[in-house]
Length: 76
Image (spheres, rainbow, N blue to C red):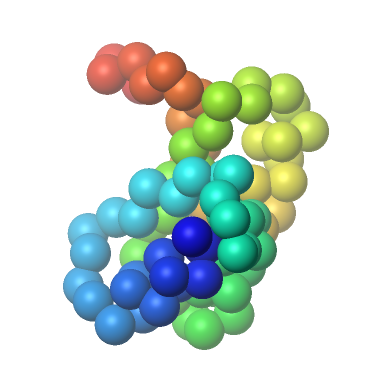
């Protein structure tokens, strides 16, 4: 639930947020935009099963600092 993720990120102190892009209520891109509009400055890493360049570009435009494709490779 992206809306719940935004609420928790704004009320807590996390070193980094791992943001899934496909969530109910509010998707990850919308959640990242909401966080950045709220002046959230900590790192956000988008996590998704979609490896397409267009999805990566959309995530960076939404405010992520990095982008990981599932399954996650620990070296990445």
